[in-house]
Structure formats: structure tokens, C-alpha cells
Length: 174
Image (cartoon, rainbow, N blue to C red; front, side, top):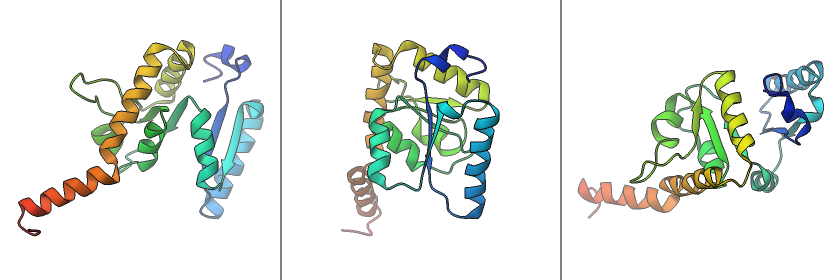
């Protein structure tokens, strides 16, 4: 993204990679990414937050503008729902659960609840558009509000109410 939009280098934009390492393979991936950042001369623009408690992740969610999720064909994507619930403008891979169930037009008005992308160029273009408009512009604020509302579809209460209704309708639970 920095190669396509070099002006972002000096605007305080930072990529924060958050996640956990489940073993040696993940640790190697993080090490390789750190080396890649150094070779691309973007080390100061990327921060790695690895194996941190949920409280730390919430702090980052409260200060971030955009949440990206790049896994291809994610079966559901609770992390995507969490980013939306936190009010992040979310960009997820245009496949699987994110495309079919999560980042979909929301409500009667079919409002934008986030974005889907497949290629590096699509991710970069969407991020650039969001960042260019500014974190508090009306369009971005509307997307954040819609994302929060849309994420409520996946709450424990909605799940329990739906489950109970299905059980009653099927006469399993009377």
C-alpha cells in the first residue's frame, strides 16, 4: 500500500498485526514478516502484537480505524464480527462466511457494513479510500454504526432466542 500511496508514510498510518503464535510455524511466519518489513524499509510503520491477553486486543480495537482479515474461505469469522462490534471499518476476504453471512448489506436500507476484497490491490484501494476520508467523516461514521448494529445479529441473546424458537417449532422443546 505504501508503494502505491507513498504519502501515507508521513501521515502517521501504522499497520498493527495482532494475533497469536500456536507453534514453531507461526513463530517463523512472524519472524519472516519482521524481516520482510525491514527489507521493504517499512519497519517503523508496522507493529507486531503477539500472544497478548484480550484486554490488550480491546485497547487496540478502541484506537484503530480499520480492521483487516485476509484468510481465504474463512468458514465464519468471529474475529470479523468482533472488529465490526468494536466499530472498526472492516475489510475481509471476499469468500466464505465473510461474504455469505457477515459483511453483507444490512437493514431495510441495505447499508454498507464493511468491505470485501480479494487482491492486494483491492485491500490497498479500500484502505486508502477510508484513510483519505479521515477517521471521523460522515461516510466512515455511518459504516461504523452499521457494522456495530449488524454485528448484533451474532450475539448470544439472538443465538439463544433463535435456537429456542427452532426447538419449539420442531416440537423438541415444548
